[in-house]
Image 1 (cartoon, rainbow, N blue to C red):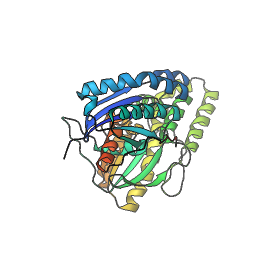
Image 2: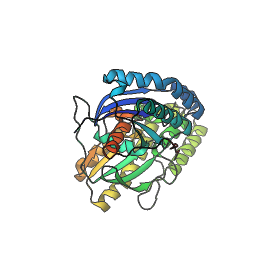
Image 3: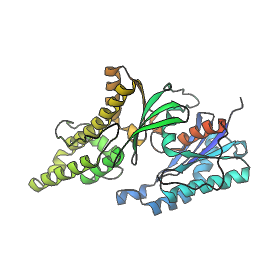
Image 4: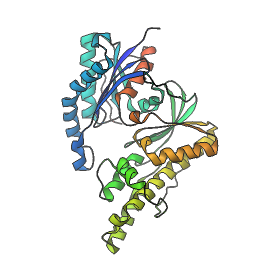
Length: 337
């Protein structure tokens, strides 16, 4: 079968990314970050969309150059349609439509969350990764989403669990802000937690039915605990930062694994993929490997560079859709949720 060259574009939030894939093999994956949001403690939508406009042309050019593929060799352009920030999505979608129209090749819309799942199937020219077999469970954990799904086959997905309020990644960010740490909170808490005592402090854990999650109560528990301790000792956070980060990180991880374990026992599916930005957390990876060995369950993570928002995962779904001729019309619009 003919090799398929896909240019993929990802602009769902604050990272501008472009990638070139030949089939499922990643030949380039370029990401331009936006440090401007750090001062605001979160992503500012207007600033994000403006930055995407500045970055997208040089990022796409660099992706093509590194992959050593001429734009005329492309078979299709895949892009993130949603969910995400509408202004950011519009930049990537508009660019994809314009470029594809000029090249007379199809466009392929991709759901950002589905793309995170199929990051597990990406390979590189000199690196073939071990992949889960169907059916498998997947836990999607990011700044805006925490979901459990059964992956029955390529593009055949059944969502069975969701967060009823806040996402795990958002909880890391909020906890970091409470502790006076900068955004994004996940990597910072992971860093400070390493020398800390993870059992030093305890926080509330939700009791939510079925396979759903809840993190709003945990965020409130952290906020009130830190507030009360600071009244007694203004230096409490600084003196206990490592233990606080370790305890918060352990609580979030325990919540995630507890519900995932229920799904494993109920479905009898013994293969799990952990994807999304929070899947890069070192403690979560360690605990999931421990869970794997204790419960005879195979656990799969994407390569670290494919855990956060990136265009390679968009290209992977684009390749799968191209094989099924699932092309998009030019009148489609982005969606935020």
